[in-house]
Image (tube, rainbow over all chains, first blue to last red; front, side, top):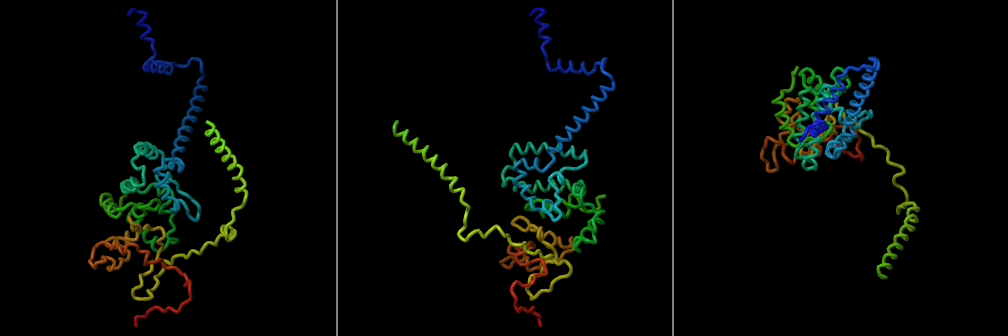
Length: 220
Length: 148
């Protein structure tokens, strides 16, 4: 191998070489462009990228997207239909992400990243039949209940707050239950299970277990 | 060869015939035997009876299943789950401050006492109904038992 061959070998574009080249371009100070132009370009690109990111995020944060998997469409969504969060006298709906994706940014990002595991389980077909879904329903429900208890039913409270509840307009039973719940520091999911989806078999035992490991009341 | 051609021609002819005749059928309005009576004038929405949550209706006779003084339409009662029992089963009724279901509901069909609700008592709404102010559909002379 003579010297010219070696030169050719070295000049062959590699990934590392490309990275070094890009870094060199980025690290070189601009000699021709004005600071104003650079700032403006950066500003506009920022808007474009941030907007694009948020837009992409919202595309995966609606009912249509959630229903695009048949697991959700055939099980969770079908059960949610005609529930009070889907159909009521006022015509206000709370769709999948309203309850299952946190609304504040940090927790939303965490949930969105965690949701990638759901894509994996979709691809492996873990609950791709009704039978498999029913067999796993208790586990799925328990994990949601646990999260709700951990976050003090944060997603419920995006709409429902004790402060805005007019206890006087509630039925006797609800008034007593809500007053007790507020003084005891209980959280929504402690009582309101199965409001949007069917309940799993063996829920009574699971509920008792959950309340023992994560005691009800006076959490704060 | 000739046979094949004739078969092909027959098929083509049938298809063409079908195409020509189908629109003729589609043009005629569908007519039911009893005339077009259904679907034009839907029944009015039946009245919704609000459940009476204040107070309790008395029993009309000794064995009458007590009426439910609250809404139950969203409660799930099926093979897997019974949401009524979440409050009314022993020992949860203590925590929920709810009336306990009758002890008779803990005897199975052989008469053995269990600490779980017996299967034949599982479907609460088979006997118990929410109390509403509904007038009898047929007038009758029924009088509640007095026990005297």
